[in-house]
Image (cartoon, rainbow, N blue to C red; front, side, top):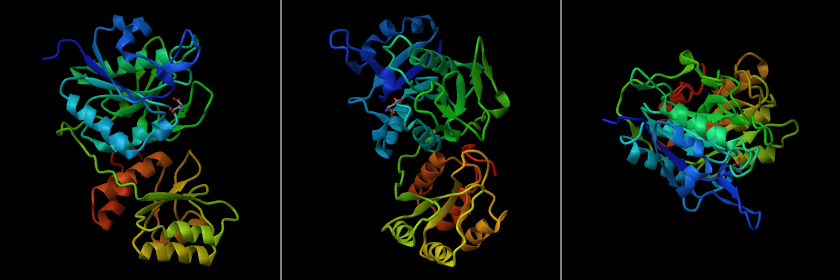
Length: 342
Ligand code: ASP
């Protein structure tokens, strides 16, 4: 029986963990052995806080499925000993990691909160301190003995988001993330106000991790003037199983017969094509315009309002499960972790 909440911080890298070296002035990775010296406020939490640091730490641009597996393994190994997890991660690919983990951590009933910062923790105006402190508070928050937010989330600049609904939209503002198609799960002001109705409730199944992500996926972003040669080369990548087709508006594409013929042929050869809009807000509605009817008739699947990040990682997850074609198609169009609204 754990008397006070126990939180595990997993530090993967990114700007947040940088300190200014007092002699050289260069940014160096933060020494987590001295977490309490760097952020003394953490001592005030009535929590047991431990941390694990990646060695070497990585800039999140180097993130890849093997590292998601490492994170998932750390969470699994420590799942029974901690009440919540805070993952410190570079912001650049944080939305991908949050999306991937939302699928890989099956039957999650504890909070997994990713956070980072735009300015290093060692700089006076850093946004990192507030982000870490509130992420810990959210990871430890319970009501009637249960975690308030048993989801994979991103906490950034006073907002808590469902991780697989986010994208990084600004490289400079402290408010770097958006969740355009789903409400925030909590807002931190004087108090942390939880949006209980938007938060997923766990069903008490046994927690387990999925580690066989299959990266044989690709994306094709349409643009006016796109050439047949280019489309053909993407559709014919050897071993490709799934393609995110980034379409216009509500899921529209060119109507030229040559284009639809290429799409039909690829689908006939076994490629699964998932229609995700280049617009970050709103939903794909295939059939609303003639420009998407052809895609639907060809067998392209609707991604509804899923983010690009969630679409890519959901495909990796489903292909890794070795499901039949029919099941993959069904699951792609079914919300598995609240990643889409159909
Ligand atoms: N390039 C950094 C990273 O994603 C930026 C950040 O930490 O926000 O790792």
